[in-house]
Image (spheres, rainbow, N blue to C red):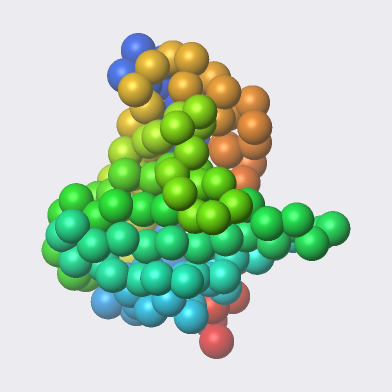
Length: 161
């Protein structure tokens, strides 16, 4: 697995995942930029994603759902803040109800993706910024840390293929 480090900073209200890949930044970027590739890794292996809308431009949005092992669906959304292909992406990440409407009772995070050349490949840093310690604790308790590691772990197979 390419994940080299996961760090939770309670003072800064961040959860940061670092992964290294034996692929160019342009190739790793495609795993974000192409909705068919994104849905092959976004979400843990037992909760595959289906991307419904995919607009990676400032002000754009991505909507998706993950399907669990029993067929249950979990919806989510991104609102794109900034995008600089192939090196960075920032978006607000949240949950949605069954109709795709943002869920107001669930935490929202700001996700910052950074791709840089590193040792002949690419280093990807995913930094989730939380509004409060309670939000961080809630999402970590729900399995966010493990889920991100499992999701990013699927990127290797796509990059090798």
